[in-house]
Image (cartoon, rainbow, N blue to C red; front, side):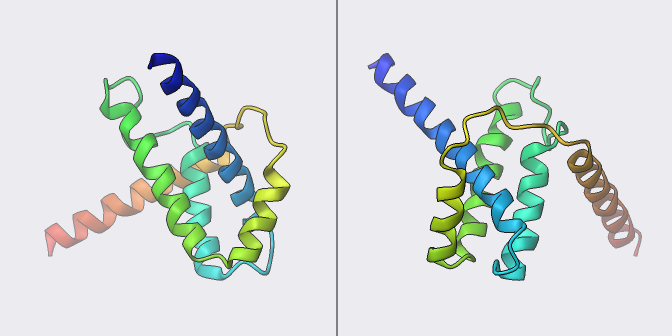
Length: 127
């Protein structure tokens, strides 16, 4: 039972990495619809950012955001991309086996999103 779970988990992680790599290709292609590009950019920035919504050192919750937010962002993004394009991007990413890089630019985007959200919340509460 434990061996089977390990194999399924490794397969899921491999598919997730492939989907993130495919998303990178989708963002660079002008044929990708703009709503998918915006949502995909946010998803990719979060996936590659070394800064998480909930820090990883917090037991269970720290990994829960990665387990839920990244796949949810990918799922929503792929729903906005035509099937033929999605298959093309997945085929391009099929050979991807390297570890996903972390991006300082993505970290900056996430920090800016948090700052903008805090400013917005402050303005709403102050009004």
